[in-house]
Image (cartoon, rainbow, N blue to C red; front, side, top):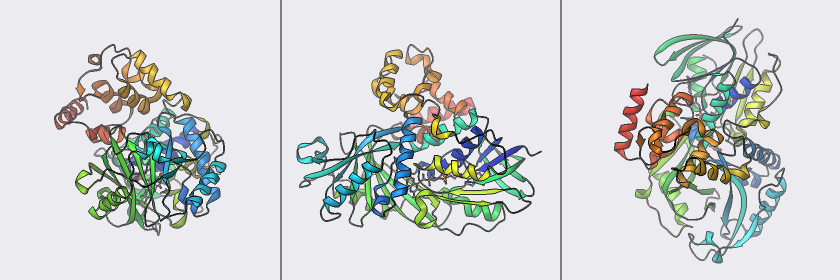
Amino acid sequence: MADYDLAVIGGGLNGVSIARDAAGRGLRVILLEQGDLGAGASQASPRLIHGDLQVLERRGLFRVRAALRERDIWLRTAPHLVRPMRFVIPANSDERQPWVLRSWLLLYDRLASRPRLPASATIDITHHPVGNALKRPIGVAFEYSDCVVDDSRLVVLTAVDATERGADIRTGARCVRADRLDSWRLVVIDRGHRRVVTARALANASGAWSASVAETVLRMKPPEFGAVQISQIVVRRLFDTDNVYVFQNSDRRLIFASPYERDFTLIGTVGHAFKGDPAAVSMTSGDVGYLCDAANRYFRERIELVDVIRTVSGANLVAGPAARDGAMAFDRTRGKAPLLTVFGGDVTTARLRAERALDRLTPFYPMSPRWTAHTSLPGGDFAWERFEDEVDAAVARWRFLSEPQARRLVAAYGTRLAAILGDARDRADLGPAFGPELTGAEVRHLMTMEWARFPDDILWRRSKLGLTMKPEDRDALAAFMAAAT
Ligand SMILES: Cc1cc2nc3c(=O)[nH]c(=O)nc-3n(C[C@H](O)[C@H](O)[C@H](O)COP(=O)(O)OP(=O)(O)OC[C@H]3O[C@@H](n4cnc5c(N)ncnc54)[C@H](O)[C@@H]3O)c2cc1C
């Protein structure tokens, strides 16, 4: 008998979502990730949970409606990671006509399955705080509701849930060979050790690596799609309000500027074809300049290349115009073990994509029914409207936390915060401090429960504390983690 029912190659959002869904349906699952969870394209998303106005513009009504339904599901199942926001589009009659924008937004409101978020509105930003950061003479803007998400933590908490449902999640485990018989025989270099595992089915969810994995690991014909990279920039905070700005650029792209980790702004995205090693994807200065120019058209405060604190890039295969939903192929050649290939697509529809992928396997296994639409991610068992109550409760219970600290921790761990802070009465009870935010207790939790192995795993994926951490604190963290391994 095979060791597992399903092996998944790739610990990006697609891979962990498939592993979670499968484990919850009763399958024995192993997931193999060569580096850290979410270290590929999944950490470079625009961080939006949305129906996508640009899809609406291309008349993709059904896709927008499906994505808005998913938006509701995420709000219900991951209220710590997914925050509703008011998005603001300044009207600019050099671009789309204001009445066209307004009509889209009215349609967008109508397409939302349950209009629990406030409807769109027209605002006079000359007399509204959202106008303060903008250049004159932009007088009118439209605001509407959508959500932002912590994409990296979404990957990790999906993996945590998968493991709690029995999945075996292996990071630092590179699949180097897969032989297809009536089951799969995989050769894995698992943290330096060669290991062989067998599985009844295989999911190739290796993102931009899908083609090279198909060619060199599976030794099959690779998917015939090109890779595309997207990039974003992080700059100092350019506005005080808690909104996402949506700017119409002269090439008709919509550029998003979102609040990012309290003191910063994330601006993106820019994309183009990519060739090369997906692990080495980086942003060109031309792309950085493009995003600075787009922001400078609208924001009062100018930004230049030197103001860019960090760039975020990722590559994935893109399967043409249907790219938003990603691509899925299912190969069940007679007498051979089944192969699923899933890549790309946006964060909003990842749960649905995984559910559909698992549905393809139902003829092969007895499986329990679909379940992920109704089950919270770890720490997400509270109503999204009560997020601030959770923050207040954390400040009341752990009095040494400042409100911003409590907000960061609730946003990361939700109702599972006690697993880190326990009965601590003072910060000193939480072990060594690495800067004002990170404590030994949190680091230990991330290492034992969330697969963190190196400082970057914590500073850039399980949190974004790398933005503010001083070099000496980082060195202390590296030493602490090395000693704890
Ligand atoms: C062009 C582009 C546009 C995008 N647009 C949007 C958008 O509009 N909205 C949005 O929400 N998101 C967008 N995204 C990002 C989106 O979040 C990701 O594409 C999505 O998360 C799916 O990622 P993935 O799981 O397929 O790939 P990845 O996150 O890259 O994961 C693949 C993983 O496989 C691992 N791997 C590879 N080979 C092996 C091996 N041999 N053994 C073990 N592991 C291996 C890699 O290390 C990697 O971690 C876009 C991304 C791109 C590139």
